Length: 132
Image (cartoon, rainbow, N blue to C red; front, side, top):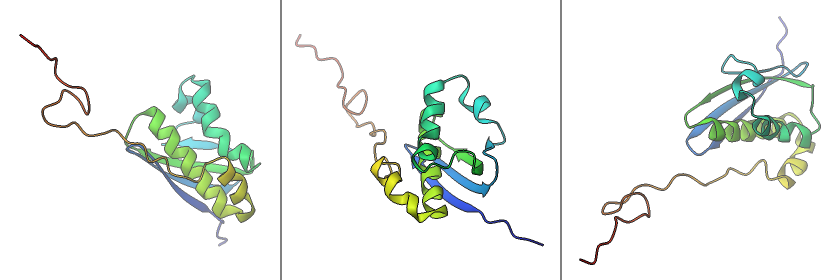
């Protein structure tokens, strides 16, 4: 029994969390059991966002990806997947790390939704003021 080399990366963005597994292969992608085209649903910008770490590390067609992503919306999930792919590629080939770092792909985006405060309509929006 031969063990296949696998590389793992966990990515997070907003409230989304993605676990990425890279296996040497032909470039097939499965996100929650669906293809990339099916998952992104005709949004070319999101597909491009997904492929930025692959292009930065020059790893197109070298790895099959199995992704499990939970939480958040489609934009946050794609950001989490992108972060996870970058971390897995950095683990797979440490020489890719500087290229991924320059593109800002290894840094976790800390921006999250601000909580609603009491006495306010939303996080910062106030209730309508009436002088009389």
